[in-house]
Amino acid sequence: MTSVVRPFRGVSAEDRLAQRRADLIEAGFDEVGAHGVVKLTMTSVCERAGLTQRYFYEQFNSKEDLLVALFDTMFEEFFALARTAVEAQPQDLFLRARAAMEVFVDYFTDDKRRARLFTEAIGNEVAAPRKAESVRLFAEYTAEQAEIVHGPFTGRKRTRLLLAAHIIVGGQADAAAQWLSGAIDLPREEYIEELAHLFVAAVDAARNDAGHP
Image 1 (cartoon, rainbow, N blue to C red):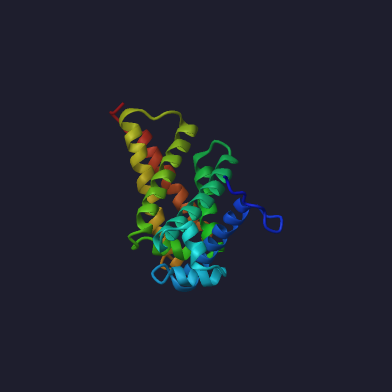
Image 2 (cartoon, rainbow, N blue to C red):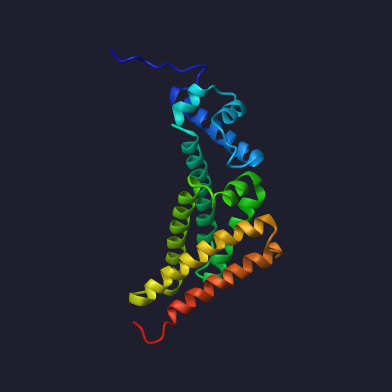
């Protein structure tokens, strides 16, 4: 006989499950913001979320699984915001690159918890591969934007376009950690525009690959 899971106080079992996951993820961000990635523990997250360990294991197999979920949540949020901002711009590569950078800067400066997770991901064996994957996905997206503006890149030019996108996006991801920490002393607008100009210059170099098809 199939058991029936009844709603509790009008809330379905599925909604309660989703809410507990959301509470644990939010508590995870709070713990990272307060104590850093290295000190993130299942116990501290459960205490902050007001949930028992049973509910933690309902969602995650380990602290490492939670850390992956935190990074994936962060990237998905950022990517959705960036796509909306970029695709609202005319087909001008500088304007689209600047829009993406504005979203990036504001997303992380508005939430110090996510900024700390982003900056500390570099040296973390669990988060670092997720960061590398997010860089790859966003680099491919930026290359797509270049082709929307300039038309298809083929042959060696496409190879150079992808290389330029990975260098700029990957380098920006590392530079951003330094900028967020204050090690790169540039005002917000200047930082954003400089990176947008760098991306446009890199794409132009790929387009103008003289002597190659």
